[in-house]
Image (cartoon, rainbow, N blue to C red; front, side, top):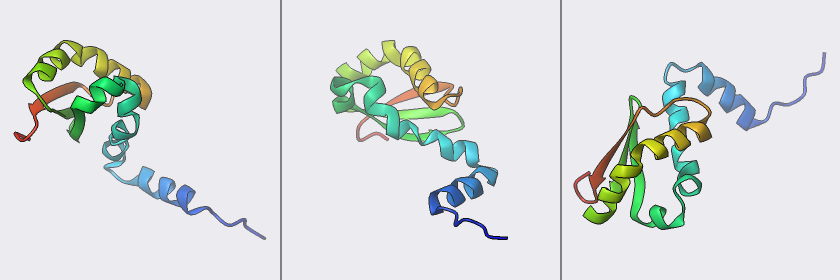
Length: 100
């Protein structure tokens, strides 16, 4: 019986999917989608910092942008979850750059 070679990416995806923390690892796809979801202007002033237990910490470069993001949090969370294909993020937490 001849088996075709398995691509490394396929093998890694299979192994990672079996890990208990697979869902948490998948949450880090937020970084991949961030610029497309928030747009170029907001992306210049706010960056994802970390994800833990469904809470995405976002580092913001000024109090003005933090105030603006405060009103966009729920919409951004919903759009990020839509990109991830599941309700991975339950909350967005804003911190001022340098305080994180």
